[in-house]
Length: 145
Ligand SMILES: [Zn+2]
Image 1 (cartoon, rainbow, N blue to C red):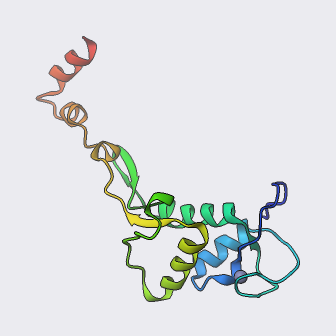
Image 2 (image 1 turned 30 degrees about the vertical axis):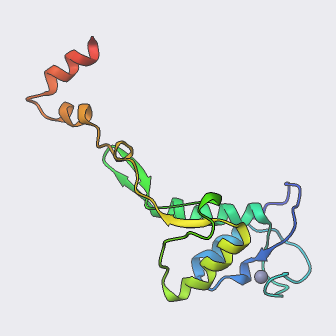
């Protein structure tokens, strides 16, 4: 399904720009159908991507795609933002390297390993105490107060 209702920004990339199959498919799914050659790879066939498309593609692929679910929570392994532009610390596989560079340079973002705060994956002392039958009554008492 393509996205035609938004006001169009400048076309920066297209789905054919990427080597990685996952990125190509996602970009083709969310990009815009528009005539003309891609300003980056010159392909006339790819779905076109604006800055907004590139950023959401990066988010889906790296952040959403690396989110780890724990018993009581979830957190991404990788994050990205403008503040980390030029300071990426991920080491992508060889076939992904150029795609990652292209995304970083186009969207001016940095992609980095994210140490999630432990409460995000359920490492909360009262929660752990609640799971232990020995300490459970005290915690319930504390919550009720
Ligand atoms: Zn392209």
